[in-house]
Amino acid sequence: WDTTAKTDGGNVGDFLPGGNLLEESSFATLFPKYREKYLREVWPIVTSTLDKHHIKCELNLIEGSMTVSTTKKTSDPYIILK
Image (cartoon, rainbow, N blue to C red; front, side, top):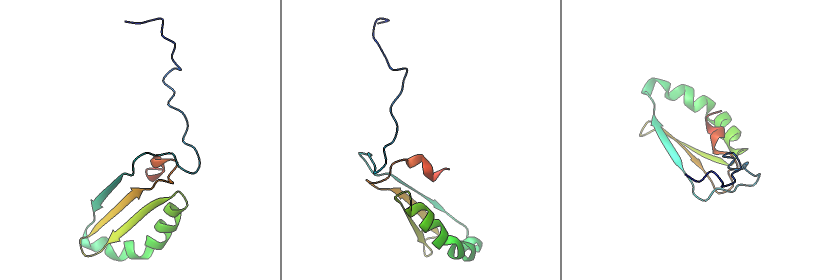
């Protein structure tokens, strides 16, 4: 065990504006048919909110799924959960 090594306390740095992600990531979830009307109504608001953070989103009404993806310009991927 090397106790002489100097560390920065586990600080991995802050996310920088303009993006610094090496990889894009995405996740999808299915929604029930009865939620389709509501999602169509609010989807423009969801899209515009996520666009501000350089997050892509897709609503697939045929499959009943929503997909959210980061882009190279995304500065904080955790914003999806906030």
